[in-house]
Amino acid sequence: MKNCIYLLVLGTLFFSCQNNTEQGNFENCRYGRPEAIFNEEMDEVIKHQFRIKQKEGIEHVSFADGMELTIFQSGCDYIKQQFQFEIAADKDTIDTKNTEYWIAQSINSFQKLGSLGPQFFSYSSWAQAIAERAADFKLAEFLEVQPGFFVKIDRIESADTNTLLVTLSEEPET
Image 1 (cartoon, rainbow, N blue to C red):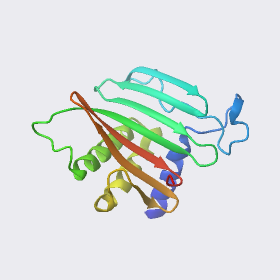
Image 2 (image 1 turned 180 degrees about the vertical axis):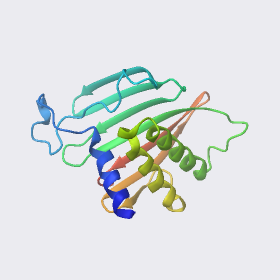
Image 3 (image 1 turned 90 degrees about the vertical axis):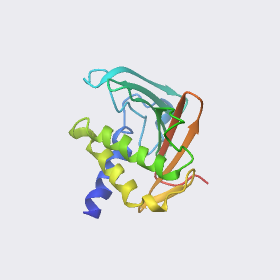
Image 4 (image 1 turned 135 degrees about the vertical axis):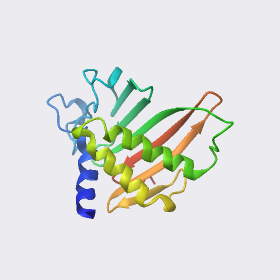
């Protein structure tokens, strides 16, 4: 089972970083040019935008269920993907200072992505990997969830919305 999760994690990390004929300044990169993960033809997607800015792919997706997601893909030889989920602020009922809250939000968000179809199942594997190591997470710190695969969970709080930041990487930032 661990090997299955490892392979699914590996597949997800590189899902959107496949080689492309338009290499531009990505021609010397091990994984090539970032590509969009989602598209506007999906029933669940109501708005989609993808662009390359310097050596970073930036994708914004609005889902029919109200979820807002921005993904930043960077790295040339070591891939890093940062998922930014917008979450409505509910200061009266949610303790946003609680690490467990953000871990649960991470698990739920990746499970939602994993339920979008078979091509997104690997996000369910990320949710499972986070759940298995939940007790070990500290906000804003990378944790190795599988050999060579790191996750960092963090948040940005504001009056109206909270932003859940989940970074998937082949190596922790130094």
